[in-house]
Image (tube, rainbow, N blue to C red; front, side, top):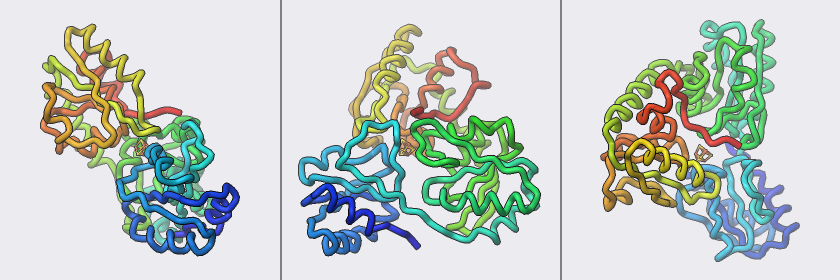
Length: 328
Ligand code: SF4
């Protein structure tokens, strides 16, 4: 099902003359890591190390690969153009080419007239066929281009849905081609347009509205719990594409202006246990926006996004609520 494009990877390794190469991939692809290493070893003569730690995105490549290898190949994510470049790092998108005609037929009765198409990197190659099918069935279709954090037309990240901005006013609905709920949830909350999902891996057509209501209720509850917080911990990630130190400093000053205190804590991997030693009433995550939403129930104190902290302190209104994003 997956195309790892090993010929291209081997050609790149030979071109840069790498002798030891680190391989990195998200959890779902790790089961292929040993075969990939063996195949590349045979094709290039280089030796390979597999990075066993979790890998969540291109934002998260292991900068310390240089301690043990002279190049790094990360599979499964597109590069983030606005991130600092390292010529010894190669990002290899792993595209899926699946026929979604039957799913589109099932979705058709629920589709509105003007549709914005969005997807994750695995499925970007399928978008033009989906567009053609929809147009042949009388729909007006728009595909947007995001900011400099986004590589492909129509692509969204969990931390960046700027792809929808140029087309949101032109569409009645977004159609998300892909698996998982976080990306379409972000679009539904931030664009105020309904989002329908066709999920080729689950073979499912589903709406996001109910989940959107549940998450908004949860976020409202988190802010209510943090309303009387006297002491915040502002959490900053050391992952290369997630660090937002300037924002953390702004939030710290904001807390102080409102008579609260705040300290900044730097972390590579976020885990509730790592925060146990600290005295705080609420946490604010400036790292991957998914952490505060997906992991909310794992933390004993409310964990907020930066915008949620501003709402708690009265600087912003609930009516301005958006999902957190990291812009390019
Ligand atoms: S910050 Fe989070 S959502 Fe954005 S690319 Fe990284 S892991 Fe994905």
